[in-house]
Length: 287
Image (cartoon, rainbow, N blue to C red):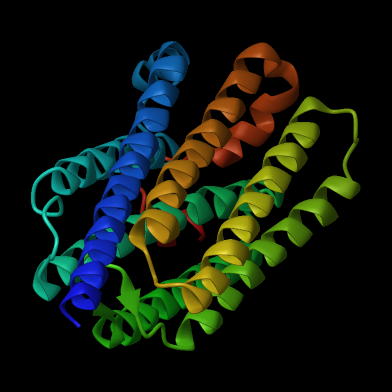
C-alpha cells in the first residue's frame, strides 16, 4: 500500500514537472517568435507606421504589435515566478486565464477590425456596408463577453492551471467567429471578382484575406475540440494564437502600406479608403 502510494506520488510529481516545463517552453517560444517578427519588420514599421500621420489603422497596428508583446512578456514573467511552483492556487489560475482570454480576444477583435476596414474600403465606404459591418462587430463583442462570463466561472483547475469543465457555449462562440470570417471572405471575393484580377491591390487583398481566414479557422478548429477532449490548457488555447493573430494583423497593415509605396498610381485610391484619422470614431468612419 505504501509502495503504491509512493509510486503514484512520484508519477504525479514527474507529470507535474514535465507539464510545467512544457508550459514554460511554449510561453518562451511564443514570445521569441513575436520578438523576431518585431525585429524583422521594424525597418518597414519605422518607415510606414512611425513616420506617417497617426490614423485608425496605424493605431490598430501599434496596439496589436505592442500589447501582444507586453502581454507575452508578462506571461513569461508569470510562468517563471507565480506559476513555477505547483500546486498553484485556484485564484492565481483563474486570474491568469482571465488575463489570457482578454488578451486573445483583444488580438482577435483587432484582426477582425482590420479585415472589416479592408472590406469597407473595398466597397468605397458604402454606408449600408458600414452599418452592417458595425452590427456584426458589436454582435461579436457581445458574444465574446457572454462567452467569458459563462466559461471562466465554470472552470476548475488542477495543480498546473489546466482547466476542467469546458461549457458548450464555447462551440457557439467559435461558430460565431468562423461565421464572421466566412462573411468577410465572401464579401472580399465578391468585390474582387468584379475588379481587375491583375491589379496588385486585388491580389494582395485576396492573398492576405485568405491567409487570415485560414488562420482563424485553424486556430478555432483545433483549440475548441481540444478543450473538450483534453484539459483546457492555456499554453495551447491562448499563447500561440495571441502571437499569431498579432503577427497577421501587423503583416496585413504593413503589406497595404508597402503596396502604396511600390505602386502608388494603382493602390492610392484604395488605401485612402483604408486609412482613417485616429481621432475619428467607428461611427463617424461608417457614416
